[in-house]
Structures are given as structure tokens and as C-alpha cells.
Image (cartoon, rainbow, N blue to C red; front, side):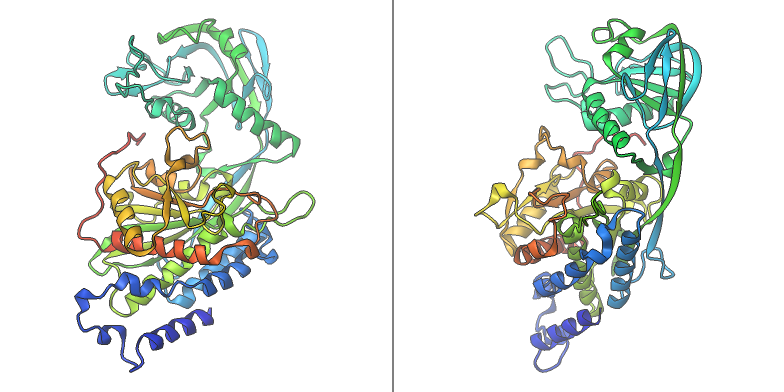
Length: 522
């Protein structure tokens, strides 16, 4: 936007009436607080100007793959071109294509020992699953971790594997994997299903039957919604394969193994089972948007600042979900942070490490754009990615915080790196004085926000993260989430916080240390 450039020029004049550059004016370059200086380019006015366009009706709710989302990525590309920030992939290619597909609710069922079980009632899956088997391999909890291995004496190659949720305990009640009363990742409802299935596939399994009453109930609600609304489940095309996972309810699971809840011993079960489930998929193209400012001293180390560019589109009665807070606020914050870094770079004070500005698609469909970036096509090596700062909803006030508005929920800052957490706290005290609320950082938080935004795909790869979040409100995922309801003073101060934190991470002598790594499936 031309106005961006004019405002930036005006800022230089305001800071230097003698028309010298900022570098010339500083008597002691080393003593200059560049972070404080360039953070002043982040203004309420520019945030508001961006957001009233980006979250307008013209963008039709920015649903993944729809015309409004195409307008959104075009807007972002133009903004980076105007700011003079190059595309992360080079050659003016700001778009990273993310191939997606929509699988309709599948039809069919399975027969276990000639007893039929229908999809959507006793079993659940969102993909095609077919085949005839005379043997089922029961792998207990389906865990391989250190000295504990359910697969130690099993050959699951091209077999159907039965796994149950949970993890083993010792006689004193502690968990075997962690050695404490705390569950490991294998017992985490949000992660275990995918982690256990991936392990079984890696060992050659054709398909997984998964017994988990909690996840069954959760996915049953989702399945019923899809069926009632004739909608499909969007997924990465790259994840389509001949492998399949089928969730079983208790009736189906106990038909295979009557005492499955108490029986933890892996074994082979001779039993005929046939699967005849079909799902027809349609293809969709979408894109992430990525720009970069190369580091001046350590260009091969990367800090990624992210937000999601999509929202949920238009309601059945043609009301537009503008998504001003979710995540228009994060999107425009990222643009302002990029402008601040670019101004610093243009004056010779740019970041020592490279800073990547990543707008991801498909967050509302299951963190798909960020998953594609981390799991399939990272533009820059994950091993060289020092941190991810993820911004998702920072423009409103949680009703629980009414009257106490100068706050921000921080999630995940201490999960992998004590150093990043301490850095975050120090930066806030020095520059922005926001009250950090760690309510949703609790591992037992029932909302599971740590697993519900794009930072998670970086965290699971042992990249330190911070997730910035204002909490939900009455307009969350509703047409009422409009730009006139944004608190622009709070949005500006929260955006400056992320900039200050990013500045410190990008310019410190050493990359932040990961002192609490998680086990990965790779």
C-alpha cells in the first residue's frame, strides 16, 4: 500500500528533523535500542486500515479454497511487494501451493466374524477402507518407546492391527513411559491416535482398528455434522494412502477381543474381518503465503512468525463470517511486524537471523497449511528453524477478562525451551508490560488450545514456540466477528510485543536452547 510507504517516510522525518538517517543521528550505534525504535512503526491506524479491508465482506469469509481466500492471498502478496520484502521461495513466488482434497462422509461398513457394523454407528472413519483379513494382530496399547515395546514380538506387515487408547501403568499407579503420575504423549487424547497409527504404518501395517471411547464420541459428533450438512472433511492430498484407521466403539472392539480393556498382552487373533468402506474425494488447491528478510550475519538460521490467513466463510443463510479477530488480527499484525523489520533492514539494522513471515491456509480445516509446511514441504530446513511465534486472535477481550483488558494468553512458551519462556517474560517487562495469563498453558486445559493452532506443527518437530491468543468471545466463529469490534490499542501493543520478542530471538548471540524436547515420530 502506498500509504504504508508514506507513513514510514513520515516516521523518519519525525525522528530526524535535520533529515539525517536514523543511523547518522545515533551518537552511539551500539547503545541505540533498535527494537524500541522500529516498534514505533506499528500503529493502530495501519492495523485498522489493513483489517477493515482484509475482514471486509469483499473477502467472503476467506474460506479455504474459495474465491474470498484467493482475494486474501492476493492482498498479502501485494502488501509484501509494496513493502519490498521478497518471496521466501524466490523468483517473486510468494505462494506455496498446498494440495488439498475433500473426502465426503464414507459409506459402507465392516464385518467382524460375519457380524456387520456400519459406518457412523459402531465404527468411524473418514477415508476408504477395504480388504479381507483372516487374522487380526492385537498390539495392546500400540506403543514403542524406550524399553517398552508392544511390537517386540509381532510381525504386522500387511496385517490389520488392533490398538487401544491409553498407556501402561506400574503396580504403584505411575505411568511406565514417564515414570511418574503424568501421562506421556502416548496417553494424550489429542496426539496418541495419530502417533500410534503412524507407528503401526511404519512397521508395515495395512490398517489400524482403534478402540478409544473418548475419541469415538468426539469424532462421532463431527461425522454426524458432516453427514447432516452434506459437507466433506478437508485433508492434505499428500496424506491420502492405501492405509486406513477405523475407530471402534465398545460393541465392535469387544467382538474382536471380549476383555480388551483389561487385556494388554499383544497377540494374534484368528478371526475373519472384511472392510467395504468407500469415500469419494474432490480436489482443491490452496496456498500459504511466505516472505522473508534475510539475516545479516546468520542467514541460514530462520525465525518463523506465523498467522493463519483463512476463516470459515459464509453461513447457510448467506451471512459472512468476516473473521476480524480470527485470524484477521494475527494477519495484519504479521504485516506490521514485517514492515518494522523491513525498515530496520533498509537502514542497515536488519535482523542477524533470517525472519520468515508465514501466512498459512487451512487452519480452520485442521491446521493443514502449517502441517504441509512442516511435514511435507518446508521451504527452509526445520533443523535450522530456531523458533516459531504464532499469532492467532489478539484483537479482542475475553469476557472473563472484562475490566482487566491489558492481558494476553500465552501458550507453549515453556513447553520445549525454558530459555524462550524467560526471554519472553523479560522482553515484556522491558517494553510492553502486558499481563501474561498462562491459564490455557496447563496440560490439563480441557480446551486443548495448545493443539489447536498452527504453532503445534512446529512444536511437534521440537521447534520452540509461543502462541499468542486473546481467548474466545461471543463472536467466535460467528458473523459478529467484525473489524469494528477490534480493540486497536490492544492489538497494536500486543503486536509490538511479538515484534520485540522476535527481534530478540533473531538478534541474540545464540539460538534458543531446546532443553525439553519431545519424542518425534520421524
